[in-house]
Length: 554
Ligand SMILES: Cc1cc2nc3c(=O)[nH]c(=O)nc-3n(C[C@H](O)[C@H](O)[C@H](O)COP(=O)(O)OP(=O)(O)OC[C@H]3O[C@@H](n4cnc5c(N)ncnc54)[C@H](O)[C@@H]3O)c2cc1C
Image 1: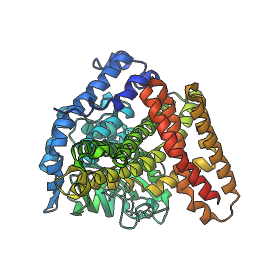
Image 2: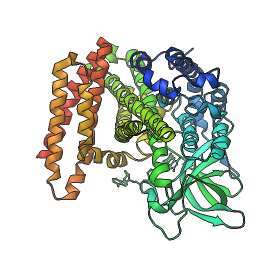
Image 3: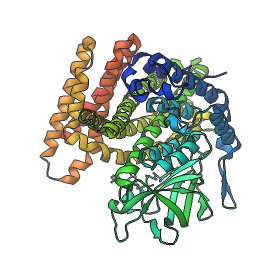
Image 4: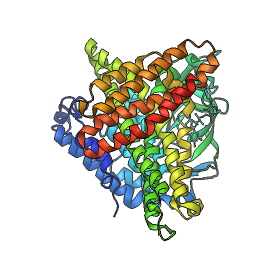
């Protein structure tokens, strides 16, 4: 009997120690929701218990069922025959269990049969599911489609589609990428043509690399404005799968075998506009992708957590030179680094998600009230989340890959064999720094916040909020932040743009290290263990940041 929530106190740490009362109250509309829905929480404690209960249920399903099915899902994979996709048997069982447990529509409002949970809880769920089976997260995580419709769709669309997602009656897909439009989505060519006779749009074109492209309901990015070639000509559409949506093939992939990746042709598919014309990429897809980036970061975290546990268990069991290999300092060091980085990843991701939650809730409140003070809060969190989201994806997916690499190394030759789980984790995590925007595109998204100086404002404020218990470390962090600031000023004087861009990923990496150190120092007030781990992180990672600064300067 395994429980992937209960056996990981590092997840619960955030629920037990962070004061989420303001956030939860905003989500629950000051606990007015209970007047409409008798199952809604009556107060903060009630809400927290509810979240923990759901995480516990998911933890059990993940540990006892999803994890048990993961190897067979990887072996069997999704299949494609006669134009139709079928999931592996284990995937079907897993999805059915999640549906029965009522774990669809986690963040959707109760009005549409959702759970109305903050994104923080949803992200914890993604971590738990991914630890059990990285490929299942791709299907579980497509709940984001429902959320995008809830954010930008018409009342009718919300009623129809959000309810279907929340009840687990429909599957979703996010259809953006084309053969010639990957990172550069403004090159999308799929056409949306207005059909006068039927008074609807119709889609024509080819899309590739689409996760779950066989879905019942999909969001599609297509060119609605004839003659345009940039982002302003793109709109977002919702479609229901019919015979005009033809799946050409599914990809034969390195990992996440349970998740079908489809190439699709649209032959006049009936499509409904979501939101306003011309806002498809600029607004809606960016929101959808930012949500998915948080999800993929959690996917990397879950897979890396499992890799660490596998490596630890193997290192204790395997003996060489007359002792367990865990007793060799080089092996121990790899394990200690993994543990430290998992803590760092969680500190960054969960703080990012809290910022995302505030952004979402203040945006809705501002739209409903027009209150200018709420608008200010929304604008603040919009920027903070806008920076932290690509930073999280940049850091978690790269470091998650490194953790899986080292975890396989600890297994020696055994790790290279199909019989052991670690090779699956190593293959599955590889995609996380590619899809939903590659690592390089996360740098492109984050760098503006650093060069504009906004990043430094956020961090200075965050340091102010950090309790002064660990003065020496706080001062070290301030010093490093100032060094980065001086470097950014120096680079501004550089006229060679190519040279500047060359170092952007280093700047983002340094910024990530500082951000994480601050969050870890904030966590340190809650336990001695967190003090030690923050100290270790600063001791291990600041020299690297300083080295990067010196290298750029030289
Ligand atoms: C398994 C899988 C599932 C997927 N699921 C979906 C899905 O559900 N829906 C969907 O729409 N798409 C999906 N994708 C597509 C995915 O999002 C793209 O593959 C990804 O965005 C990269 O695009 P690309 O493959 O065309 O690479 P390219 O854009 O060709 O990039 C190639 C390389 O060039 C680099 N590069 C490109 N532009 C820049 C730049 N400006 N600066 C620096 N470096 C740059 C990239 O970082 C990368 O290293 C999926 C892909 C895979 C493999």
